[in-house]
Length: 422
Image (cartoon, rainbow, N blue to C red; front, side, top):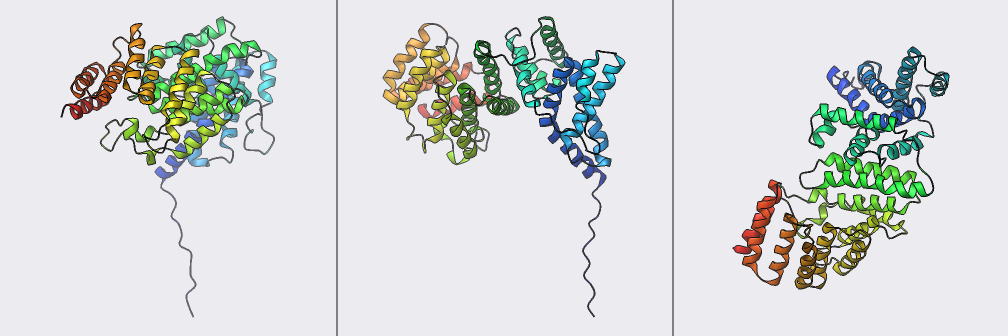
């Protein structure tokens, strides 16, 4: 008689592994739950500090309980319940008006359920929160910091590091921003009509700044990641706003190249030297789909179209520089700036030849807005090299290298100089 086969008994997971899994679950839940909880509690209580404190306490309780009790079936709802209960306790002790207590009580989960689902209007709450954080009454750095802290849930210490200040300074900035919102009576709402048209560009500018700070050579990728996430959220909440879709498309098309911008040794690679097989094709497809929904010719729309020309070119030689040059011609007409003028000179240099590019570069530098800009020197070096003057181009690349603050950029510029001089 054969011996019955027994299934192997799986040993219990080590305590450390259970704690790590619970911590990971808390982290995953907090990405979506934290800003939603904060947005909801701010709407109900009007108290920013209380909302953030209760959300943080809910995460702390989860870190304490989930390793032993297990991860709940509805992690976000569980966190909302804990945060709501904490807010109720604080408000009861403070004997605040009954209206807030009533509204909080409405978030109580039905009997026998693990926690409330996120209320339907929380999505609107988050949109209200974005517009409040990005109010023009606040300085641009305060808008960025408040958006990262309140909407994205980024810890104050991380925001301080990313914005190059110490934590106490950042804490004071955030406190001043919240106080400014309260004292100025800034409404917690999404504006409508002409006010929305007036305010939306400011919101998009904050997201653009977030993305740019994360995408630059030595930028913190978390900035760019959060900008993409917020742009997706804004696009979902405002699907009929073309510039929102355009901004999302621009972010995705640019972000698709992030992993290909350096070689295995960490050296910077220019666009024509990147391995296009490493570009994120899913991000490109999502970006192009967003761009297809754009019906207006705003500044982000033109930038997204330029990015799309690069993203869809099978090789550097196949890039449609004529289309890019025309896009920059349109862009500079609606958003003139020294940087746009510089990029337009590059595009015309590739579309119509280096002499055309140098002519536009001279005009761009005439106003003084590009004085001391190493990129302008590097662009001139590239155009001069394409004219055939390799030695002068090498000298210009060395001049640009002496002006940059990034080691990676300096190495890339010096490598180009050595190639031309060799």
